[in-house]
Length: 260
Image (cartoon, rainbow, N blue to C red; front, side, top):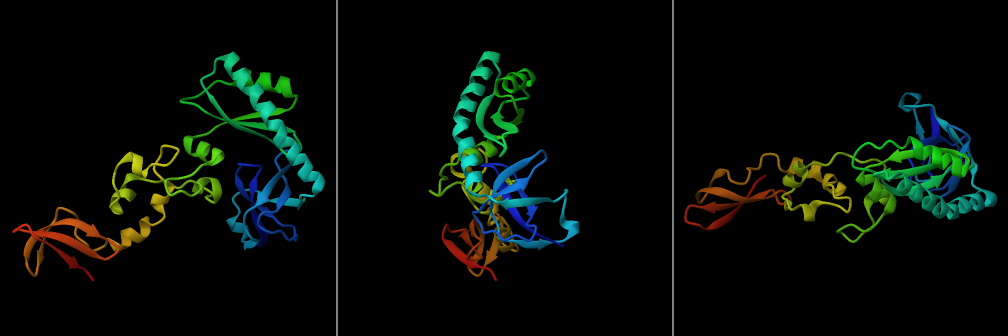
């Protein structure tokens, strides 16, 4: 049994479990943590919890300490340095004529590594670019190709609902979203209505899908012919929330039929 917290590494990194080592942290605290090579930083996003050894999928690393004023100064210096780093990388990409779009970059806490995030239509041979960047910054370089959803998560923005993007605020992982989810909820299948800023189906389509799926059990589908107290008719709409269907009778009138 381990006492752990979830930490979002750096600004837009992976959310990972870390052992608290018996220390107390609050949601929002910046912490210094163990990394694959050296130290890194992140922000606490959950209260402490206890997990079993069997729930740990990879070696559990520890939180070293809560970030102190010196640590925060170092993190701030790293953030301010990023624009210069991005400008240099963009210039090198243009010189190499690489078909890639630079999205973001970030330092590890101790500046032992710089991570560059980019999007591209296909695979990109960036080996020479890595050499250029390693020579320019005299540190380890890592390039990560990301998808359009990850791009939206990093850059942020407002969704059609007027709120900040779910992926940029609290979603930990991207769950599969299908057009079937929109159909089950009787949503318009217009791409502009059900797509997010990333151009993919909105993540929120999956939030209530399970509820709608359960509510739809036993209800006839649109187009089906059903019997009503006023005669047979065709189902023209289904209201899962009310557990009712609208039926058009043979004479053209419409009646709402409730289902238990």
